Amino acid sequence: MKHRWIMIASVLLLAALACQVPGTTPEPILFSTPDLTMTAIYAVLYTTPETPTWTPLAVTETLLPSITALPSDTFTQLTPTLTSTTGPTSTAIIIPTLTAILPTTTATTILPTNTPRPLIRSSASITATYLGVAPTIDGNLGEWNLTNYVVDKVVFGLDRWDNPQDLLARVMVGWDTRNLYIGAVVIDEDYEQNTSGVNLFRGDSLEILLDTNIAADFYVNYLTPDDFQLGISPGSPVPDEDPEAYLWYPASIDGGRSQVDIASVATGDGYRVEVAIPWSVFEMTPQAGQHYGFAFSVSDNDIDGGIAQQSMISNVSTRRLSDPTTWGDLLLYRP
Image (cartoon, rainbow, N blue to C red; front, side):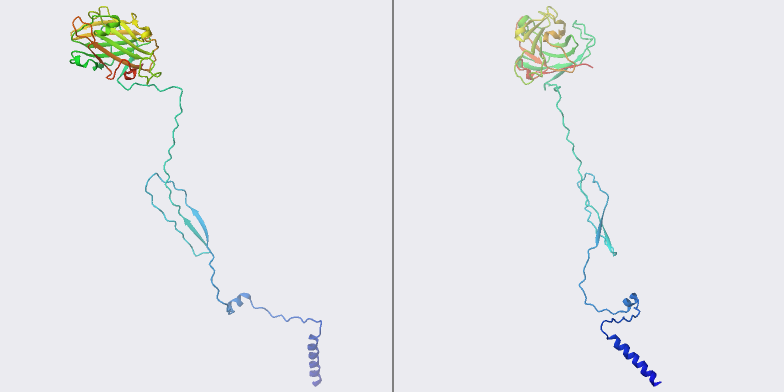
């Protein structure tokens, strides 16, 4: 028994010495490792407190649909609101600021055209209506159904004009492709026409001023070849006895115009006159819708047996013979 223990001790001694022999590597003694989770639970850790590091939360912007503001001067300002949740990611909803969108004004560009705008005299205007049936020139105005224009502006001899019974008139104007038609009713308590031709204006008579091309010389304040002055005598020495027409201007073609058809009738307080003037007298072709310079006037002579132009009335208060810019307007209207 004693020898057995000696033998065991010797074996152990030899084993211990063998572990110290150079060149040999002792195998580690492996122990089972406790579960890591359990270690984390039961381990007591002592660490130096660290300064907390703040990591910015990730922000996701969600834009609300675009808002179009109605045109208004008053808006409610909405302040953007940041809403953060406690999770790892916060979502911020940004409400956009309303921006006033004013209506856009689109400029309209008017392109020039080759057709000029009609020029119209700013003074009194007369509309000549197209006549489908030409009137019978007999001094009877019963078939005329046109606008009457008052002729009462004293443009010459105001000191010798007494009152509307002394001189007043109404005129109607028509047209067709052949003629310009004049129908006038004149109040004149004393009819005196004792001359003719170039001097017929020095007695009771009518005068027509016509600018046939107003667009060519709208601002020209003197007579040009497209300006016409035509005189009408209802008759001498009484209405409807030897009536006549005389063209004073253009001076280069002045003279009597026998192609003008004239008829007049004496009335209790004056006379009526009906006239058809061929467009050829004015050397023009009429155009519907066209404007022309125009003035209608009546001269008066109250001297028994005398020859004089004592006064003149017109439908245009500014009328001056030598300045077409003072004349009125004539429109050729065709329904």
